[in-house]
Length: 395
Image (tube, rainbow, N blue to C red; front, side):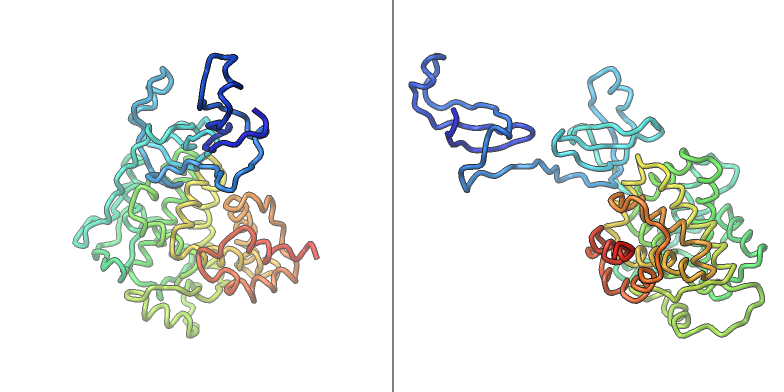
């Protein structure tokens, strides 16, 4: 059959329809056209119309929460009805790599036909009086799912305004602990306080219960409206001023604009860097701790990062992590407290970077001066562009 042409489709082997002389096949009693499966390595491309067709299931994407169903094997039947996180698609196996809820032994490779995407939890009603109230005595899994209701904001694009509530429950306890330790949130709006308290509360639960609560936080976040992810990212890049107790220093223009427009302004810019001890404490024990816990567990962290990548604020979130890493070199308070953790989160998000060491002075300057222009929109956040910013040490 060498040298003959055919039409290709495929996975690991090419399927060819051979155009051949009948006599060649008569020895096997077969005439005319015949399909053969031949290894790719034995089949050079000899026709311009030959293309490789890679299956791409349209109904799923990394970060989707789905339900497993219709598995027939003895082991598979035990997974039917369980929730899972879709991590990535393996085109060679034609399977989705999935993280099964409360199955901590790794991931499972499942066909698309055995995965049913679950409907996302809707945003809490605009008149919901008990939005986000989580009693510390409730089941831990229920607490996190309820807390996520506080990760909402007044989004003009969705014509959504969070309901006014009395800030109580576990999120308030976590927030008040920061106040008792000297953090002054006098420049925060009420929904900013709720968001900060939520991150502090969930991070504390993840720290206490390890992988189980951390996985639960990812399922709860990704199983809800995409707004929850947007607001989590805002906790990093668009943070109101957090000062020391009784510190009445004048805010700069950046924070004045942030405060004045927060309730009706779509934030597409970083707020100024902060290096107060209170700010470092709140970030370290809240959103940074939460994502540091997620980064420990590769089986579901990849689903989280994929969902982050679909946010319109993704590039600003990554810019903040890079700025902390750059300011670590400058020996600022926020850099010292948060830079190392930011580098670990970035390494989890971009495995090709392997290990990001402390930045050189030259790399630090490049990140601080050019980071905003290089990563100017979510699509620009690529491994290649991060190498442009971080690979100065190789010069």
